Image (cartoon, rainbow, N blue to C red; front, side, top):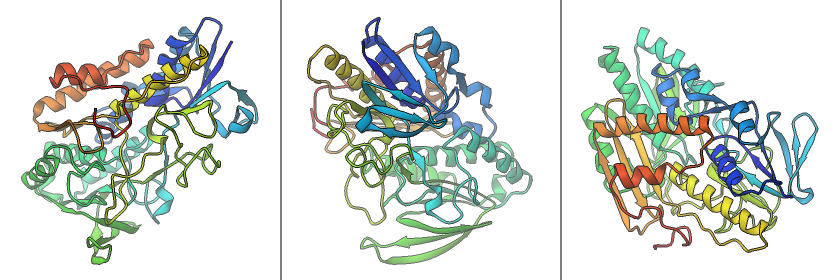
Length: 432
């Protein structure tokens, strides 16, 4: 009998549990450790922040579905992973032992690295449902008393899509509230150019997004470092290609949402052999940690090197498609180990993204995610908005029913019409 533990119950953790359960035998035990009992659909948070969704519409109580699938749900949360002892220490002092551990915690949000950043400082966030609900109250105050808006992503950020999404969703919401004419908008990003996305662009994301910003009267600053944030004022440094200071900007705002840099969660950060200096989990091509061979990792908490040097540090995003490919490979590799075989499955690490703009949007596909690519495609239109709504409904239904069916491949093949998007058995970044 094997005891498999999944640490985390976000996008990666829940589908990891579902797919892992399908691979285990009747006598094997599967445990999910998370803080609280709810799954929240993070991609909907930009809609929550402007009042288009409520908490009850995007959250799922995992208690019943996990029990129905025969998965033990531990809701105390993890204090520390002890990989040398094959156990996870919980916040109440108890421990859960494991034969195999899959770390799917997602990131820790590094707001504290910039003075004044984040919901406890002077800017809003859409990284968590609680943050988005707080942002909704700030949005209401903005509508009541219009003023300048600053949206973007700070140095070291790796998830740029939600920043662009929220920028245009907010713009749409302000137009609908008939106050857009009194709200100057500026996008501030660490990216070297608009549409870089941590991927050196996909298709013509640079042209598409710059065009959208011009059409909606949005200014932008790239290669930006946020020095600090005061109440109503952001202090940014714009740098040249060699990293020298190009300009200093004091940006007044009545509302600001800035995505932070990510790092590994405290439960794993600083464990030699397990994580890199930022606390992200080190894995090989099989999603397996090279030091602790019974520890795997999936999702945003996995260490991936940046695309290349940029004037301001920019990370690589982990899109939903990539995460699902990590999950499938991990479940099959652990199943192989349980049968006495060696791991052989490798995630595809392709990128598929739908960026909703409220009444339109941009979609892109990168195969593989790291250039050079076999598929390098982007497009825009109202269909993206409706596709994102369909994605939300499908995925939440999947979580509620406890299904392990991959969604992104179906989306890519049927909605986008691009064949053979999900290739397998090749190295991350390798053209196949």
